[in-house]
Length: 422
Image (cartoon, rainbow, N blue to C red; front, side, top):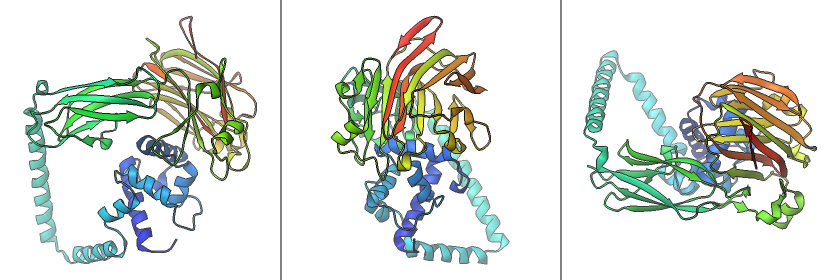
């Protein structure tokens, strides 16, 4: 890629995304960090940018041309802009920005120690004033002056709309926001003198909605978006996923999306693999992640081209946490990660070879958890064992991630003799 203004804007965009993700410089990122970014972009924009695409953008894989405009638009939307053009209009970049930086560097080199100390003193004073202002503002908040609630349009199933009802008339300023989930960076500004805001949820899960005044969370509540049983979808380059009909994917205790069904919807398997997701999210009562047995069988038969690794990820979703179990072909275990309620294990620093298997055949996964001691079994053999650190959390469902085709069957939780079949 050349040193054009477009490239300078792209570099600036990637820097802002690094800062937003908060996992340090991209040069130090592992495969897990790129996977986490892919997930966050998907959740924020409903568009999937694969780990391979992200690695190319950040120069970890060979990339000799500018990304497609659909990719650029997705990156811009992730940062809160309408599209790539809006990002370029709002954020300085290109040669003009470089000139400003060069002038700033030249000025910086001419400062003497006296002006440096003066600037530092002014900075310290400003920080102290800001802290005192925030403490004072927080102290004057009367949370009982605010109300915040929500009503789902549908009891279960996707997509689903939620109507938020709020009263923020007591706010001193007009800066009132609603955040639909735990990520307050995705908050939406709402008029403080009005009382209703509606939003659409395109994927199931457990969310923590928040009413925010300025930078202070004044009210929040839990919000469960249930899947209505098994749900299969493909993330494409649009805001709305492609939802498959239940009678197309369900056969007794098995859910499957094969090449024939993808072809019916004109979903191509090459050159880029579609991001296939299975969900089953619902109220599971008192089932917690520190005491359960989980069993499932998975298969991903397509293994041509970029699907050679047959990567599959099984997620046990919790109210405030997640357990993410990787599976892949044996030759690809060098770049996988295991995550369990605060405990992260990277294959670059640990032996995760037990998660390598032939996914062209049915693979049995079993997870056992007792008092935060967790064991993972693949086809009857222990693949890993760990002790997780986070507080126990209620389990609310499952998510399966496939690249291309996928199938799941014989899925259940067992807790103190009680069997919960899926």
